[in-house]
Image (tube, rainbow, N blue to C red; front, top):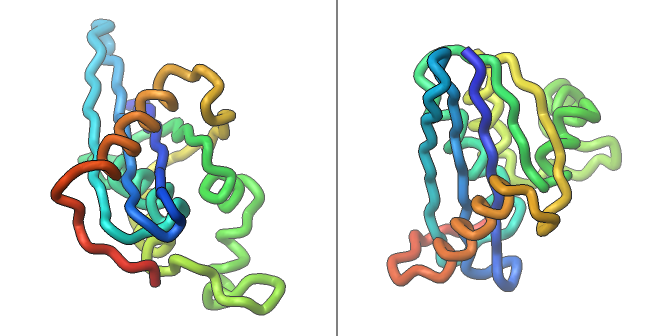
Length: 156
């Protein structure tokens, strides 16, 4: 089964109020399209945490192993996998080559657990460049960050 996941994160102030927007899309063999949208806002967060959480929510929504094309405008998330940073971090207790600790370790570990059972292709797209699903995810993320019932969240 092939599934597409799109996600985007937003933060005003960085740290500040933020949110994520995620779309999970599946086209059934009969051609019927199935789309689920997810978003949530937080009172105090960073853009990178929202980028990660958007990805996590998409992968955690899958109920069985899938072939996944994950698309995001976050170089932070996409390059971690495509440039093999994540492999280095895992073997060095989440310490980067410059000897600094990887930020957001809690979310990186949660994402690694969520993607572990899937065959994933990571695709970067330029943000705010007219990509239909990326634009929708951005809209969901911004709207969530502007909501009234924001979840408390502090960067770790």
